Length: 150
Image (tube, rainbow, N blue to C red; front, side, top):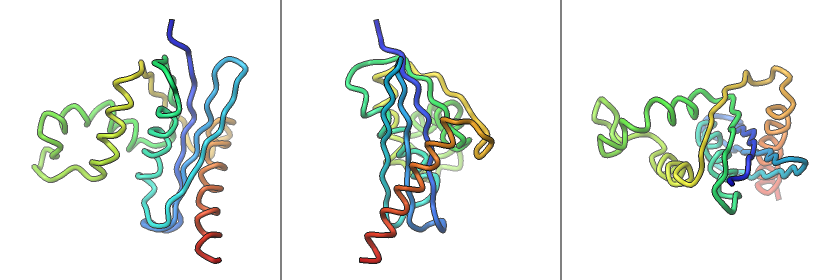
């Protein structure tokens, strides 16, 4: 039987592009794990995607996963756009290359391993999981900025 896991994911960016971070809160039963990281030059969308990818990569076996995100770009990308992009050779309906194709392909690989249920939450609205993922994403950004200042 597959484990049931809840992921709260978020990304942050100061400037767009600029330094950014991602955060994930993972819950399974009574267990909670937090992950975060950052990049010196990125976009908010890339950090939102990276949070989901890193959370899924951290699962060492197939799971049933509920992902909570405040990113419509991430959620709609997976649920509405990705199948068409794959059919079109990772091109948009306007025949242009898909932005962030590297991350979409990495996410696609992770999605194949699990049974995923996507949920959208309004950002900064008091949802405890989303608020903590946001704090972790900002910590990832802060860590990048602190390294740049050394």
